[in-house]
Amino acid sequence: MGAERPLRFAIIGAGMSGILSAIKLQEAGFDDLTIYEKADRLGGTWRENTYPGISCDVPSHLYSYSFEPNPEWSHRFSPGGEIQTYFEGVAKRHGVEGRVRRGEEVTRCAFERGRWRLETKSGRRDEADAVIAATGVLHHPKLPDIPGLDRFEGALFHSARWDHGVRLDGRRIGIIGTGSTAVQITSALVDRVAKLSLFQRTAQWIMPQENPAFGEAEKAGFRQHPETMRRLHGELARMFSVFSNAIVDASSPQMKLIEDTCRANLESSVRDPVLREKLRPNYRAACKRLIMSPDFYQAIQKPSAELVTEGIECVVPGGVRTRDGRLVEIDVLVLATGFRVDRFVRPMLVIGHAGLELDERWSQRPDAYLSISVPGFPNFFMLNGPNGPVGNFSLIEVAELQMAYILQLVELLRSGRCREISPSEEATRRFEVERTEAARNTIWATGCRSWYLDDRGIPAVWPWTFDRFREEMARPKLEAWTQAG
Ligand SMILES: Cc1cc2nc3c(=O)[nH]c(=O)nc-3n(C[C@H](O)[C@H](O)[C@H](O)COP(=O)(O)OP(=O)(O)OC[C@H]3O[C@@H](n4cnc5c(N)ncnc54)[C@H](O)[C@@H]3O)c2cc1C
Image 1 (cartoon, helix red, strand yellow):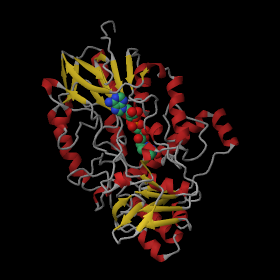
Image 2 (tube, protein in one colour):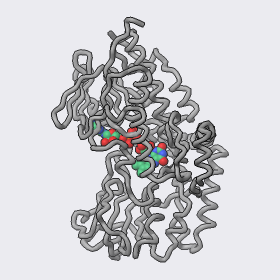
Image 3 (spheres, rainbow, N blue to C red):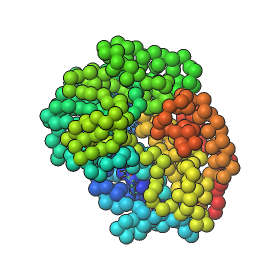
Image 4 (tube, helix red, strand yellow):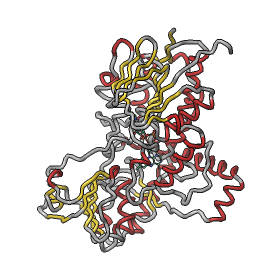
């Protein structure tokens, strides 16, 4: 292969996806690559989210790179700090760490004269033949629009910006939101604080999930026989495939099983009938992201906990006033209100062919062929981009499949088959039409409000089975791709 074209890559973001892409590019023999990371540390989500009780909600032996099983996971769902250590360790072992330019936010990325020209906030410039945008999906905190937030006199922060300088023990804590994060914080804090008030706008279905620790003997077994971890990874992936196949078919028997389990959990765990009804969602299980918890219902029934279902009128200097005029006094107010999930690579300015701005193309809502690439933006690939699979399963597996797909496209650039590759407008349009059509039959479209829904109320996700995603990622259909040069 003497005629191979040398390629330079810029990877944007050093979270799980950015680390993965660097490892996979290196394995494929590419040596000329730089990762730009705006923070001073790798890790993305797991660097930023350090709230009490944080853990993954996909089993740790599945929420691991397939090529880097980890015998040291302490729990079935391990704490966030361990996950951060894991990603940093993997990056180090694979020689990725040294390729990261920390504290460098890419602000502009323009395709000019056949190459991507990058600029960072600090003024650094770079050029690359291809860009991998691994900028994250649950990354930009969403702040609620509640009057008076700026007048609150206690400590106030978003769950992804936890202020560890603030004392929690013996104090009155308010949590706004009832997603996975709020549930994890509630369970972690309820025994430490004087009072925990959980402000619920929407009740959530809770899937009971025990979280046992791995014993020393089990870990030693994993260390001695790594193949058992690979087997476990495979088994868990199959189990989660069943789950993810179920949620795209709202009338499937598996979906009914999930709903029955959640309902039985509520009925059997919450004693007080009034509280039970307050905690009962009025929509189908898994319509919003399903919450896994071994002990949330126990936590919310403790004397120090209160579920506040009256709507919030405003925040006042001493706490939160609800619509019935009551003041809930609070020392520390946590906004567990999630993320702006339609941001993706933004606010970075991305300019493709003929001066086309990505922000302009996405002014209504983001789109991408197979969630990976956008027409008119050659050699620009995204991991965990728009409308991808984001149900209750491992986004690591998603990123690995996407990266394997991207590498096949990159091979066309390396072999000289073309100098530029991007999806055709026609293929992208057809994909989007089929995707939105199929999304209407999924559980996410059965009548709840959730972050899965776009501005039209259509689930902005991969609406087919995970098996279909795997098949689609196995080999690019080249007729959908425009090759030039
Ligand atoms: C609390 C929480 C729990 C979660 N639990 C799970 C789970 O159990 N299972 C699961 O599969 N997923 C889970 N997720 C989703 C999680 O985000 C993904 O699994 C994964 O960590 C995403 O990795 P990423 O690299 O794609 O994005 P991120 O981790 O968001 O990393 C993106 C990186 O890009 C950097 N960046 C962004 N823009 C720029 C720029 N312009 N220039 C330079 N750098 C930039 C950011 O600083 C960041 O480091 C969870 C998310 C949250 C918030």
